[in-house]
Amino acid sequence: MAANPRQRRHRTPTGQDGSRRYLAMRKIRLVTAWAGAMGIALTGLFVSLASAASTHAASTTPTASNQSPVSPNGAYGSTGITPTTSPYVSSPYNQGQGGYQNSYSYSPPPQVVTGAS
Amino acid sequence: MTTVASERFTTLGTTAVICTTEGDELELATQEARRLTAELDLAASRFRGDSELQKISAEPGIAHELSATLWTVIDQALWAAGYTDGLVDPTVGEAMAILGYSASFADLDLDDPRPVVKLGRVPGYRAIRRNAEKKTITVPEGVSLDLGATAKAGCADRIVASLGTSIAGGVLVSLGGDIAIGGSPPEGGWQVGIAARHDDPLDVVGPTIALHHGGLASSGVAARRWRKGGQEFHHVIDPTTGRSAEVIWETVTVAGPTCLIANSASTASIILGEDAPAWLAAHQLPARLQRPDGSVVLVGGWPEENR
Image 1 (cartoon, each protein chain N blue to C red):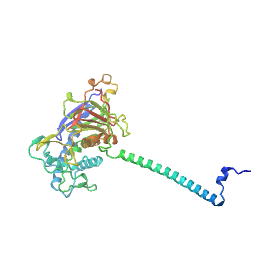
Image 2 (tube, rainbow over the protein chains, first blue to last red):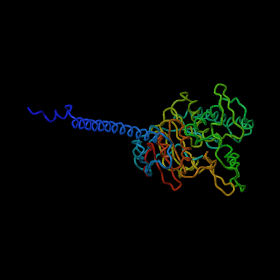
Image 3 (spheres, chains in turn blue, red):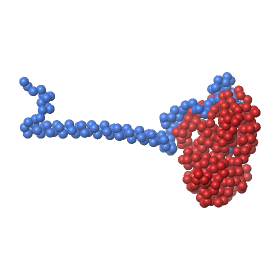
């Protein structure tokens, strides 16, 4: 019965030519496996470094070169910080006070003023 | 809407406004504000000959035991310096004097023809030595403290804390526009108008916001401006140059958990210039920054303005 070619490729070859072919194939397989492992490791390393760099950038005082764009109407740009409702301040126009709603000209009179002193 | 009682008086070279939601509590709140601001003036004034700070400045290089008030004021100033990475630095006293701000603003020559000399980086807050156990500080020779950047805001917080739960309802303390609140605010929050100057008349005040917790403060370049040697200066000093900060923002208003935090951040923002919005957002402080041309940047959840 003829040997299965797949089985034959994995069988230890005999003779000088077979031995050379086997060693060459084994070397190629080892190099391929090593390169694959290094690729995975390097990819992981680069991802970690990129993540650490972005965390560092977000946690340090901004400079002119890394500042985020800020639109004049207050929408905040690319730092990943989304504006949320502040616990400290709110608009007096959105508190269900009838005539004050969404109308600057009917704003409630201030009780006190803040500004440079 | 809740009726609010209020009282005004002059102190610390500016105007104090005290508001209470319960009319009967106004007198007590005002008395406490008068007491604590008078204590602050005596302890920390750079211009009063009899102030504790002046005595320390007259004897540099030795450890001075401080009153509880001055210890607290300096502690707050050093905290603000650390919080802002040295942007709001209490060792700007000498730079202020070189630029010409060497007397109370009311007595200042607002157009001094003499030239400005010897400008440079300020000594820095780390030059001050503290002993927390003995409550002493040592200010080295050549270092002059100016606590004006944080003293009013810290005092507003102290007045509110001192009143604590001893008064019913809510209280608002404004010292030159540096605002601290306590107790239960009036319905809809305390209504605070925003202006270039805290003493602007109400008909030129810009948008109004409602304050619910903590504190609110503004820093700006519209007040306390003067000329010396043909150059114009304002009172917010960039510690890296010893000069008035470059004017990118006319007024920065910040809200925060305390008035001291809000004030430290608003002053730092004037110095940071274009970097201020990102810094404020990173510190999760809602803020409104207005440029000299009137355009506005809002960050950190500051409410949109409905004009």
